Image (cartoon, rainbow, N blue to C red):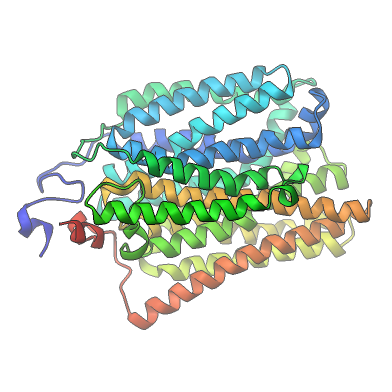
Length: 504
């Protein structure tokens, strides 16, 4: 029975006569600009780390916290922030978080020493983590049908392109901001853009209509937060020997997440509202596989850009701008592909991500081979077309995967679902940004001048993560072919969702 027949309710729980918000596309661009800034800040700082270390007289372990500390607090906030947005008001949470992001960006730029910079980055990452899940949840709230697929296409493109263009953007800012303190403008640039986004968001973003689900599972918040912290902390401490000293935290984190899962199932059985409904992973089509594909992909994808920055600047003596320009072909390829992949996902389904992952592996693998064996004076430039191919593949991975993962999620669970998806991606990114540079430095520690060998080994490790993501995506594609399940547009009614059906 359709929602209309069952009483005239649509996907947002509104009557069938509900009219779409006339400001929805302008509101989407406000959230995408804010999301772009928050995700860009994960990778934009990479090219400035040598300068920051020199100017603030920091150790390698301390300066690594400028990147990893942001990723840590970002990842810790996501699921809780998504649930708060679902329970309270996504617009309010988004605007408060965006205002905090602007304030802490200014604090990062003004930091007089490495300690205060790290503290400001932790606060900035926390604000970004509260803002990020509201983006996908607001898309669920504002759009329906084919428009939702297009909106998720733009959102996925923002995620992919922001990671790829970070090194170039950082290099440009360092080149334009003259002087030894130019790195501060990497943070200051967020301030005027963020202020404009706050003002426009107050005018354009819709409020969340509360549906009686205002309870927030505080024990779940604590269990999940401690579990994610235990998994991520050894990774962000990798430069200081965290993987060997703190290995036991991985076991503790896994145990805490098991307890968290059991607690969530118990809440569902008792009819209470969980922080993260386990049925998202068992009954919502595509969610579990999409979360796994995204997590595995980010293990390889995120660490690659740090390794490139280290190789080009330390190994080849490139400036930050030259280092960013060298990887720009990937960003261009991602932009081109992401612009069209959102419109192809309903037609091709999981096959699109299978093809995209294949392209990324071929592009980055070919680049690694050229940088390892081709003459160094021409290797970065003859690798450009191959890197562009990898970017085209990347544009067909993140955007379609986000669309397929979230399109069937009920609106009242959209924030928590988006937060959980991005938590997996942040965990994958933490693994990648710890493991790949760690392997790079490991080779240099034994062979101090073998920059090419160090790059090749680190890239090979990143490609293993992408290959695992490809295997999972290919399995899902073959399973869909065997069962012949259609990849039609996202449902028009939340009543079509298995989660909703079980709840009612």
